[in-house]
Length: 462
Image (cartoon, rainbow, N blue to C red; front, side, top):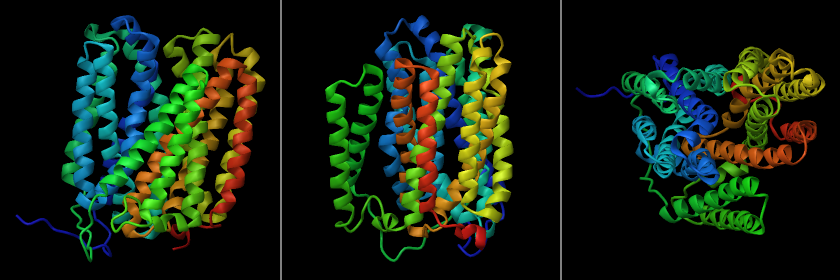
């Protein structure tokens, strides 16, 4: 039977159900990252691995994903976003099983790297499919759904991991945290086959994959993320700065290449759009703040305050409540006050950090003392996340969507690595108070970057 192909002018009739599939993949990635961070101490005890192996069990996934995201986004343009999305989900399922069965730390690292590459095929396709399926007047509402899902997944992950490890069902221990991906991934795969649209993008000429560009983008990402991860863990030896400098230089060559070749890996026209380039910078800064806050609160509660993994997860749970409320409110506010919603979110996040700082001396007695600050910070993050993607992607043309999604998602990974490396190092070297002050400075810089965005995104005014 021939497949029906809807035109771009006709909104896809099953678009909201298809959005749930895309959000399921996003949740699977967020859950996996947060669960593994909590499971690493148990993995160390079970497999007898060294500290560097522990670090790479966590970092290998992020590194592989960052290296592959730009290429994954472009492959969606060339091969088809639905096809690449489903291939990525299937690969994520199989590699999660490999992780759960890993007999040694080295095998687990290799499985995590493969898992990250599959995630790089899966995640960039979501934004492109949303832009294909939804009319402009519904775009902000669709993109706003990412805020609650990301918040619930990233904060719910540690709670789930702590409970699973403490229960030790069937003697699986840490392995059950990877097996959790199987039902989520299988449901996403089956629903994706049934619900995602079969769209063919009309092209005047065939598009090819720029293999030298893939090598340059991958090498540049590898050098940057490797330098950031290892620098934060090893105390910034001189070779890590050389790696960072080399990564920047490689991306300089990459920038020259995309302007000179017929089939660039990234559409150079993207970087002539102030809203997109400014939005990517904001995404880097904000992703770093979110990732570093999650890490620092885990270190603070477990290492300094003596909470169990389950108690630490429960102490952070109000973040998800705040993110959901903030995301719902941010959607409505963005339609009325535009980019000021982002700045309001940053201000509220700063208030949450100050509240944490004020209540910290009492938190040694009970995790409930952290709840107000954590909730307010989550509220600000929700206000920020809800409209941010709509501002970044509203002005992106159809032929630029794959490139835009890959670069944006890779930038988020880079920002997370940068935040964890710098602020995590600052926390271990100084104090929680000093780290919060540094995060406050980053919030101020991000606040200023928001002025690079248009007052109102195209989707809001349509």
